Amino acid sequence: MASTTAKNALQAKAAGEVKVSPQKGMQQMMKAMAKEIEAALPSMVSSERFQRVALTAFSANPALQKCDPKSFIAAMMQSAQLGLEPNTPLGQAYLIPYGTNVQFQVGYKGMLELAQRSGKIKTIYAHEVRENDEFDIDYGLEQSLKHKPLLKGDRGDVIGYYAVYHTIDGGFSFVFMTKEEVNEFAQKKSKTFNNGPWKTDFDAMAKKTVIKQLLKYAPISIEIQQAIVADTSVKTKIDADMSLVEDESDDYIDTTATEVVEVNDSETMPGQQALDK
Image (cartoon, rainbow, N blue to C red; front, side):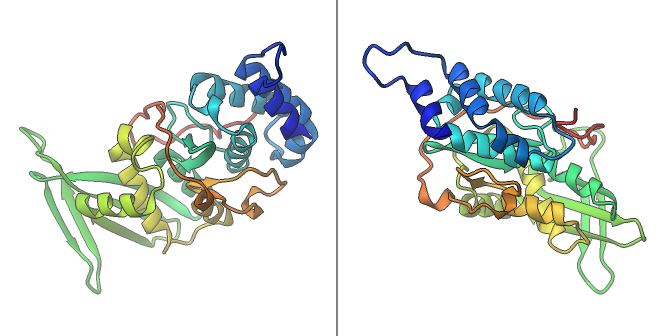
């Protein structure tokens, strides 16, 4: 019922009907779904805060306004439950048009934030390697990684990316991928490779890729596992636990390009948890 009301408000199909703006239509939808939304929001996020963030993201991107409004709400809910703020310069998460629906995508900074919150990771970071840097890795019985960026002169083109974590008990591990491996991986795995952050922030997405590969072997929390599963998902249903909602991305064709806010490609961790009151 809520979805039908919102679609009618957004599309104004009936002849002679007073048309409303997409923003007004989204407001009406969130009002109609207020109980569902409030039940699904994490305790640290107020309904008012959620609506402000959602409307800001929605209003800033005309392509999102053409998507199924319920899939937009579901993607926002996924972001809220993970405590990540979408489509902002923080680069924590993205809402990307995917056909007629909205895809939720965890950003590079979002993956760092979630790892840091786990309580098991002391430090985690990723860097690009350029062709004139001093770089050496050893995956033998005793792993080692040495990277000295060239401080003077042209560092050259990017040739690869690596991610490293150190645990609070002194353990560590790392993963390295060449730029060609990252590019090939992204084209195979990302349903929105031709639009969105892979086109506007390749380096940040490449770092996220090596971090995701690294976290597969790390002592991570359930929250990070849920984020990895939720990454690049498309959903049109709301649940108190969005991780239980089925990913519908295989049912849609990625045909819609969009613009997303560029992220600041810095390793600085965000100082606050997104979507807090």
